[in-house]
Image (cartoon, rainbow, N blue to C red; front, side):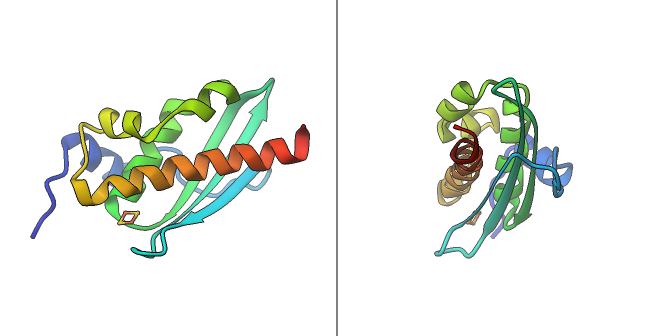
Amino acid sequence: MALNYSKQVMEHFLHPRNIGEMKDYDGTAQVGNPVCGDQLDFFIKVKDEKIEDVKFLSFGCASNIATASILTEEVKGMSLEDAKKYDWNKVVMELGGLPKQKIHCSILAVEGLQKAIEDYESKNL
Ligand code: FES
């Protein structure tokens, strides 16, 4: 049975923003969900305590790709403090909603970003 994805989810799934590996990152994280087996890698470049650049690699479902894509778009240029407060409800809202069984994909994306910021802070604070 096909999932009822919004237009925004399909757009970000089919044309993901900021996808790819970053070699000269300042912070990185790899997160996964043990139940579905999906995984995300996040990379951030930080300048003046702002997210100058952000990239992700997805090894997961359509929502995994779409949520990470829109999250990277939203937080690029944002201060680390504001990015730390960005929560998965906002990701879901920006995507025009997610099927209930796919909410965890947005939580995973936010966790990936938070952990990449933590990685940066653990090396720089
Ligand atoms: S089904 Fe688990 S991250 Fe999408």
